[in-house]
Image 1 (cartoon, one colour):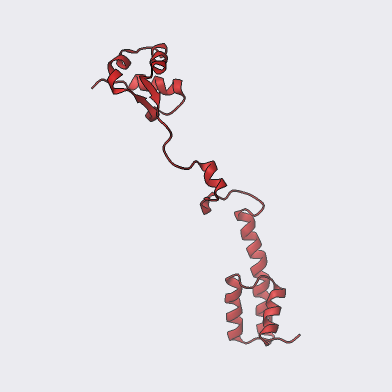
Image 2: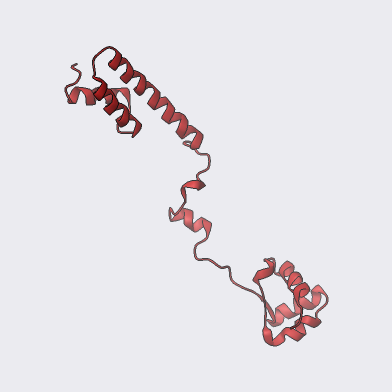
Length: 144
């Protein structure tokens, strides 16, 4: 077999693609092996002895984004970036837990109820302190 690695490298530069995307016609392998300069390679490209293979894969990244096929790890800073999402969660959960602790210490809710509502807050079922009071009133634990 003839070594055409140098010719493949030059063709990759000319075709502006990767080394492995350069395809060489097996019938014209001897002609390609004789090519020494980039001008010779350009001539062989025009003749069709050397050509560029199509890109592998089915969907490009831009198409993935437009089709909403993004993986969770691809989120990059926006209004609600990772840092902001965490900060928002902290700003929500701390007052809820503090309020529940306060209600438990004052004897307005039992320890069992406290555990129940802390778990609900942790799972995101309780959104705000107002929402917490609404739930407590609906279940008859606290009166208005």
